[in-house]
Length: 539
Image 1: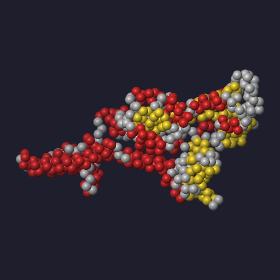
Image 2: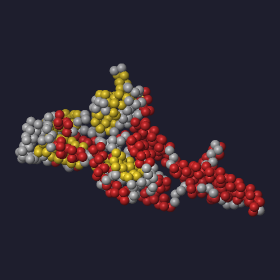
Image 3: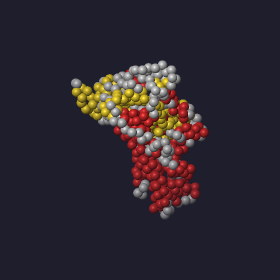
Image 4: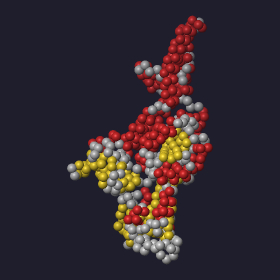
């Protein structure tokens, strides 16, 4: 009785609203079993309790799934700040984001979240767009570039002209897409509802017919006829249909849990077996999601340790993810620290600092071109001299490298970010940083093909060059780069339209709309975000 109260209440409201659904049939079956037990001496208490328990379990699982969905939406909502600093009448004032109009100028300081979509009109900075696009490396923003609500201003001062109101920005559209996808019922859910609409009135009508006809046909008493009718309602209750968890599904869910794969229900497991296309996010799914140093190329008479020692001194005070990766590599190598003075971040280009009384730089190749270097003629090794901007030699010793035509493009073609290290007189070395591929990624893609998955597609917000490099290494059938969350949704729908279903595997809030739109959404869990020595898992 205690477990069936919610079910009976739901059945009452269904009857009052003339909605003949499973709730109503379950309520009639439970009350019928109790009535037969109390009024007619037939012991059906266990049947009533079993029906109430199993249906309550189904309701509990559904409620749990809805709570998880609401938590995902709350994470999206929390991305955007509630207030923005707006420039009005020459002064900076803090106002709620809902009060900011299109065309207003918003000020965003280093470390702050960008409150609204807009175009940069003043300032330069590196913006972490991972929450929205999934890009592993912050993107440099200069006047004229577009920025998105919910992204993070890593370094410089920015002034933005708002292009979308709070309720119509990129983040709001992501939230709306997730809500729409969650509200769209699957074909199985729609079938159950349609089935209940026909099944419930048929069963009730048949039970009434049995009650009325058995006295005349079988010679039963009126009491026996009522018992027959109520018993039919109990037997006809589609409990097994409502909670369709056969032994194979339960075994699959249990096995998955033991291996760190949390499956929300048997229907998801069944649907996964039917998909013929899988879309994979790049950052955090095929890659580790963490930047690390992959290559160190010493120039001149420098060694790898010399280059790392110089880079460590320059990047030690930097908050940029690339700088943090370089510092981690240098400290792992146990390099000695150098004295640092006058550290300065050159927004969008690199950093500058005094190391042991001499000015050093670390940054993009363009930074060193501005310093006057000819990057087409730099010596990789030396027999007594180093090519510098002040003593350009003709590379007659055959030991020079063309950074712009060979080293840099080759590293970038592998999806790596290139950092040059040196002084205003000499380039000491090249460091490459990348979000490294998971060691098991290529084997996983091969296994998907072996299992009969026709299309394995990589979807990423990263740039074309990086996407192509990763796609070629892992062996996916297709890749799509520079995608916003809504573009990923469109890609998933396109894949789904031509087959039996599509699974989306992603890591991060920016993948939420695509995960919700796919036939099956697989989100990388905490174990999946650990270093590559550990196995990725999916809740």
